[in-house]
Image (cartoon, rainbow over all chains, first blue to last red; front, side, top):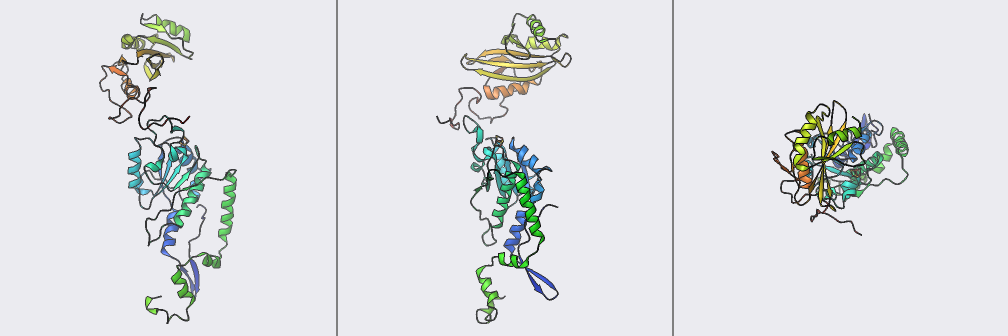
Length: 239
Length: 155
Ligand code: SF4
């Protein structure tokens, strides 16, 4: 089991005989999507060694973030980790792969090459200058190659974006792409320390904290707070 | 065979072979284009050379001299020695006989050099592009290649 970085969003209500979990579909769905990203193995050059192999290996271990089930087939993947130079000949295939992936799909572009063409930008007859010329990108992870920690940072950024992202009312809403650069001087030990802290914190269940954290839609809040006057303010809507 | 001895022995094969004074760690000779297949066949068949494998075939664009240098790297499993055979062809008419009758692996290696340098291999069975699209115009590894896509480094 990996480290669970986030509890199921919701509020526990005590009722006689047990608890009831109150939450919203958007939150549950986004939580589930963010915690079970399935990356597609798309490594075209040197970045792939760092991004897919070192990161997936036991020392860095992508599994801790719920994204280790790398699929060789786009039909079973919803996260495209672009690792490596993209050339003109590859561009149509990349587009096809992206379109074959399951919706909703997310893209992390790692390395200078997928961001801008990187070291091959000048005097190159075939290097595509940035993956975003072909497909939309959600998170950019700079570096040549980026360290595995930087991919983790990018992945956590993406998970945050997903959780704040789509709702059922507005499906397909994309947030603006972000650059996820790891601040200088951050090491693997720092990240591991942070993860441990989270783990300790997660072990203490604090229901009131979860209730406070939860943002309700404005209408629902008024209804539940003004219980005594419910009869006057449109009881026909159903509670 | 040692490097110097091998180079000298190969040069005695034919008048079309001359030593190449390259700072290489392996013996290197220059061969005239027309004599290439015959020489390479002899290098393959004669037991004291036994160059059974064509390791690699590359080209160099010497644009100042107006020449392409075509380099064939040979290796002998029997004697464990290497030989690099160079052929110089003019840039404006780069033609050389194919080696695929001697070493079948040369077929794709020559297609690659044709693809990127535009060297024409006489008598090649299937001289098509290997990496680039079939409708690509020009040969991008030539030093004077330019197209609309290429960016120049700002000065
Ligand atoms: S960004 Fe650097 S390490 Fe990554 S694929 Fe490009 S050249 Fe290789």
